[in-house]
Amino acid sequence: MGKWSVVGLCLILATLANALAAQAAQPEKALFVGNSLIYVGNLPATFAAMSEANGQPVHSQMIVRGGATLSQRVADGSVQQAFSTQRPAILVLQEQGGTLLCMPDKNACNQSQAAVTALSEMGRKNGARVFLLGSYQGHPRASVALVERESAAAKQADIPYVEISEALRSASTTAPDLQWFDADGGHPGPALTLLDAIQLYRAIHGRYPERGFTVDAPIYGTTSGLDDATLRDANAPAPLSDTPTRITYSDAVVQRINAMLQATPR
Image (cartoon, rainbow, N blue to C red):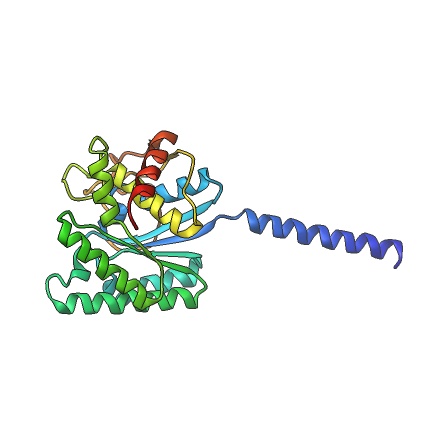
């Protein structure tokens, strides 16, 4: 091989190495699909900030609307459209609270199961890892029933289930000093948003996060201005100018919730 051929080969190899390094540095895209249980506290942005702080960069997007069901997202094609333009590597589904408990009737849970299955199949066909993130119920019997229903729905759709309800009941009893709920008493407070993010991180990466982090993104409340289920970046400017834009979770609180989750029977 001549001198210039060797030089040319070296340049080609260097270019390929640089391209691969740039590709590796790009964060994975995660798409969250659901309702106010996702956007109150901004779980997608919280998950992205946690992932970044713990060496797993993620760019989070969401398709959310208050009171939305997954069957609505199947009907409007918004998730399919997001895959065609964004190609997320992770798809996180969360159903409206109570829907998989057949509220208000049996038709609701049948439609929900069909939607979970349809969105899971679509995500897998597009190369994404799909997860069903649980919701929660306060009453012990309702909580157990919800976990059973959600677990069954995930199993039928052949995707991992990220349990929340029983973990929340145990953790909130152990640490009543933490702000588990929003001021309305039902939506996630900062501690529950963090618990959700930790449970999801563990399901995806097989380990607990170790480091605290700061979320520089809208920290939505129940009045969010997110009135339509359109694709948006988790850190995009909030529709309402008075939305808080930062929250910090310390190493200590991350490790405290880790310890509570590790102590919860599974």
